Image 1 (tube, rainbow, N blue to C red):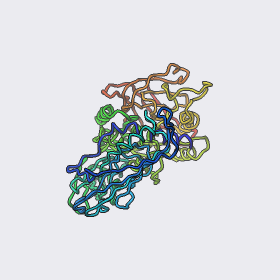
Image 2 (image 1 turned 90 degrees about the vertical axis):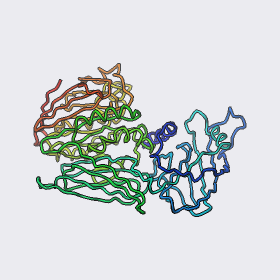
Image 3 (image 1 turned 30 degrees about the horizontal axis):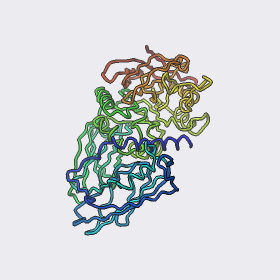
Image 4 (image 1 turned 90 degrees about the horizontal axis):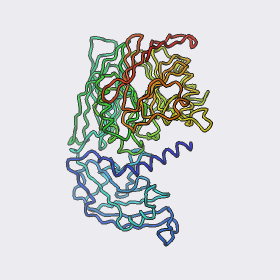
Length: 544
């Protein structure tokens, strides 16, 4: 759809602007640049006629091609290769090594450094690397592509082909615990070179309170490693990565899984919009971990541009490594993820479809329903029918819907259209007009959302609390000047870093909204819904 195409284009442009500030890849112990001293001879071909006056030059497509030769004395000593190209991520790039096409790990992602290149492509003696760089449109930089073309024609690109030894093996992203159940969970990590990873997990055997069990699993050869552990109540786990020649290995853990999920009792944290500010995200993540939750739900916008591969480590994983490794994490996709392919690899859906952004999970009698709020939620549409089917079949005492887009908000994303009648943003309008009535019909406790970087609680007449917890690190938003008309049901609004702690005990759920410094902002109590026909569902509450 046009909106998605614009979002993807914006993501790619943002990648190019953010690239100079990105963190480096996980450093190796013995980096070797095989292109050290190599000579490039770039041929630059404008793909359209260019005016001779620099002042009148338009943004125009171009194509650059070159190749270089380099010598390798002993190619068998290297385990993997990384190519750092030095080009604007907007450009289309093609590289070959000795005739082998170098492809990024995930199509649709932008890479400053392409990892996981097969070192067996190297030959003893002479090797050839070719490059083709082209730009079909303006790069969105202060200089036009023609100006960049002039510079690159003189300077070329500062490319590196880094050779990694087996001893340089590292787990650079993760682990992150995923879709947890009382007797299952997932684990995902990414290594800096293709390898296998073995996971060892221990816990109580399902259905046998006094018995303990141990499970081991080994991933397929690759960069991203995903495990689903079933049949035990998770307690501790560890990871070991090892190269095929056994010369390189790394062990991580063991980690103790936070909390002890039990029937009728659950503690969970809700937070979101941590993107752009790793230091703030680290502060909120560490504070949330102090609550020792059984799981975390995230309302979206994990990074500032999801298609920029390097941002996932810099902005999301590194600042919250301990929380993500020890507390099961259930996110929903936000607009800044830009439908990034990596998102679906790192956060497998429990619905059976890897690329499904909608999911539901019931833990200790509490049902969580996560949705892609930017999708089409028209009344009677496929998504709305799916949601009603999930709600109609639920036997959970408490239900929480997690989405990025709130039905009611008193900040910028809740603004009204030109007529002042409904939300200007389609996802917010559909959340209010389609999703919220469905939640009310089936006695859902609350809609947990982000998008607006604030803490808010609204209590619309449908009886479903709308809680905006979008203050996990992103730049904070002010309350709208027209907020009374925009959202007449607002109870609490704070422009502050925040997260929410929910404690379920039997038929009572209590929420405490907290600042990043651990101060209480708000509290709310819900009573368990009456489970029966839709007309008989209720959701008692107490709050302030």
